[in-house]
Length: 177
Image (cartoon, rainbow, N blue to C red):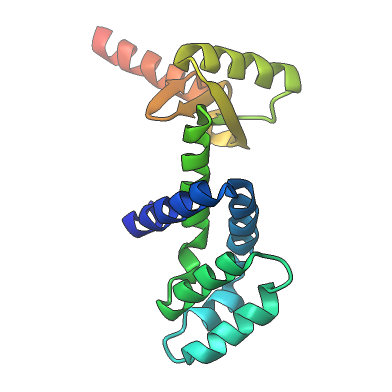
C-alpha cells in the first residue's frame, strides 16, 4: 500500500476520532472507493488536462447527496492532486486503523473451493485462538492451490494448501534420492 494512502487514512482517522464519526467515514470512503473503480470516472477526475474547478463540480454533482461534506472536500482535494485512484487504498488503510482501534485483526482465507459456513467458522476459530484477537475475515477462491487453504492474519501465513504439501513432498523425495 502506498505510503501516501496510509498517511491520508491516518489523517482522516484522527479527524473521525475527534468528531466520533468513524462509521460515517467508513461508509463514505467505501462508497467513494467503489466509484473510483470505474475507469472512465478515474480517467476524467485524475486527468491533469481537466481543470480542477470542473473536477470539483463533477464530484459535488455525483456525491453531494450520498457522502458528508468533509468526505466531499477530501475527494475534491484528491482530485486536485490527480490522486482519486488511490481511494481504495485509503479506504483499506482507514478500515485497518478502525479495526486496530477495536482490537480486531484482519484475516484473509484463500481456498481451492468455496468454504461451507462450518469450515469457515472452524478455520476462523483456529486463527482467532492463534492470534488471540477477534478477526474480520475475507475469503477468496483460488483453484490453483488444489485443495486446503491459505490464511493470512497480519504478518502470519498459515499454509494448509495441497499444492504446498505436494511441493514439500517433492523436495523431500529429491533430497532423499
